[in-house]
Image 1 (tube, rainbow, N blue to C red):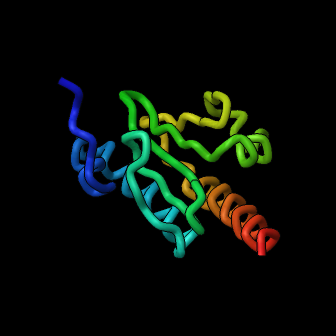
Image 2 (cartoon, rainbow, N blue to C red):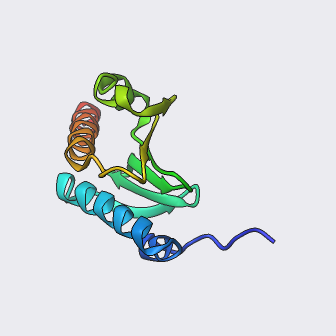
Image 3 (cartoon, rainbow, N blue to C red):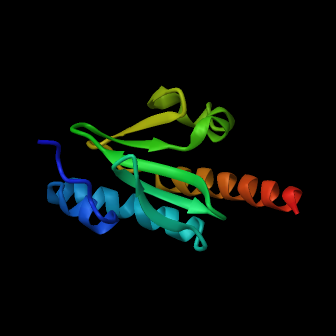
Length: 124
């Protein structure tokens, strides 16, 4: 039987050990502060934020890291900032045994939010 998909981000976080949950809460708060108009949801069974109905960022906990998914555009723009972390196409892994780079996360979220707002203006 497949694991139950969490109904919301609180339920998602509650499914992890306390230390990992605290890190997830920090990431969530950094995103909320950087994009206060963003809407929380669960997408692909992981926490996600949208802005103007478009995906802003995703994040998820794993055994040894928190995955942060900022879409390829932001990933390319922050390639140098992400260079000390393991990365994939559109993803970066923040190790659980290090402090979460909350300022970097906020910077990426603000970048994506500005891009989404810019795109929304062009459609008007």
